[in-house]
Image (cartoon, rainbow, N blue to C red; front, side):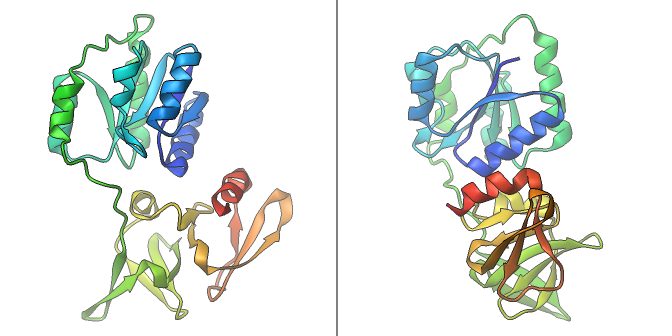
Length: 251
């Protein structure tokens, strides 16, 4: 099966690729913009299946179809709300709501496979869909988090947070003042809430702020150890399979 991902946020694209890999589906290509996609489709054989983000860095992904006739099956990935999603239901397009859930991804892939060998008929009025997205929401990431301290709520700017980590089924933030606070969320939820240019998930347990990195040290088994300016309660290790992505993120 020939599969590609079109997603402007590279960490999100890599995460989806890893999730598909767990389903024994190899992603052949990852594209990140309308212009890059148009060029690629103009010079390559179209894939069997496309995972397509709606909002790309240089416009709506529908613009690709204005130039290229796509013959592939499509599963849209989107952060739009339920009202905008009505358009996709009406047009019988598969979609996955971000953050993408493992079980929903597996179900969408299974639905696609059940359609084989007949390709999906892409008879969609994209103009009707775009009318529902006249004011598409910009990528907005959380700038503040709150934590309960006794009877009070304390507010933290993301600039003051060194890292987020999980421990004993709880999620904590660690501040530049060297304090830990329990917050009401999960690391999985943070994937869509944190600016990927500022925060990176180095392992299953840690998200770190690039501005909080004090040192990066070679570690056993081709891994890396991260030293932050204040947090020193646990070792922060970049998992081996994430090392390459982590180095790309640093640049």
